[in-house]
Length: 335
Image 1 (tube, rainbow, N blue to C red):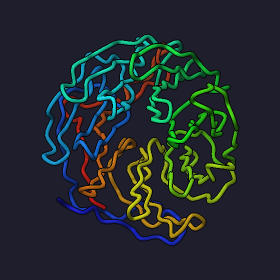
Image 2: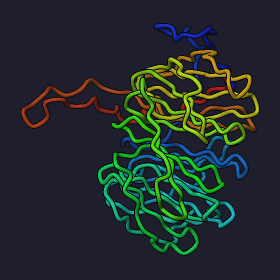
Image 3: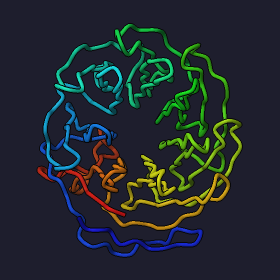
Image 4: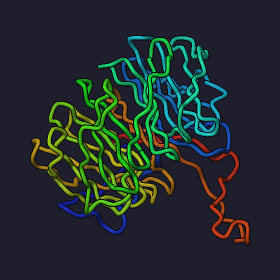
C-alpha cells in the first residue's frame, strides 16, 4: 500500500496540493455514474454504488465478491447489522431494495413516497430506514424489519446527506437552503433548523457522536462544524471545491473531506473546541465520494476518467463531460 503525499497546512488550503506518489486503483466494471460508498469495517465489506448496481468488495482482499442488482439509479446504501439487512436508495424508480447482508440477495422492493431518493439512513434507535428525496423535499420512513411504510416528513428543502446520533435524533443537510435540519425519527417531527452561513450549498455531512459535533461540507469551500445539541457554530474551515462526502477517523481525530476538484482536505481536532486543516491530499478530478476503513487505515474513493463534454446544442446547452469507457474504479489512499 502506498501512502499518498500530503501538504501540511496551518489554517488554509493551498491552490494546489503537492504531487502524490502513484495511487493504487481497483478497477470495476461499467461506465455509468456513481454516488455514495459505504464501508462496513466490522463485516469487512465495502459497498460501491454504480449506475444500476452495487459492487460489494472484500475490504481485506480489495476484490469484488458480489453484486446487488438491479438498483436503478442507485445513490446510497444503509446497513442494519443487527437485522441482517441492507437497503439501497434507487433514484430512477423511487424504490428501496432490501437485501440480505449474508447472501446479498434481494428480499424486498419498497416504494418510496417521494421522488428521487438520494441519501439513505438506518436509525438504530427506532430501527427505521429513511430515504431523503431530493425532488420532493421530504424523507420517507420504513420499518427496517418488515419494510412497512411509516410515513413521510416535509423537510422544507431539498435534502442531501443524513446521519443519526443513535439516541433519538437524526440530522440532514438541506442543500440549497444551506442549513441542517434536526428531526425526531420516531415522532417524524422537525426539532431544529440550523443555518450554515457563511456555508452555501450544503452537501456532505458526518457526525462525531462522542463529541456531539456535526461536520457539514458546503460547495463554496467551507466546512462548518456545529454543536449537535445546540446548533452553535464551533469552526469554519477552508476545504477543496465540489465537496460531496466526509469520512471520520475517530481514533486519530481526523475528518477526510472528499472534494471533486481532485483533493481530500484533512481536518484534525485536539478536543471538541479546536479544529484545523492539517493536510490536502491530491487525488483525481471527480473523486468526491469516499469511505474510510479504520482497521486498515485506507480511504476508498470512486473515480473515473472523463472525456471532454460534447458540443453544446439547443437541447443540451450545458452538456456534461462523458465518462471514458473502462475507467471506473476506486482510488485507495492510506493517509
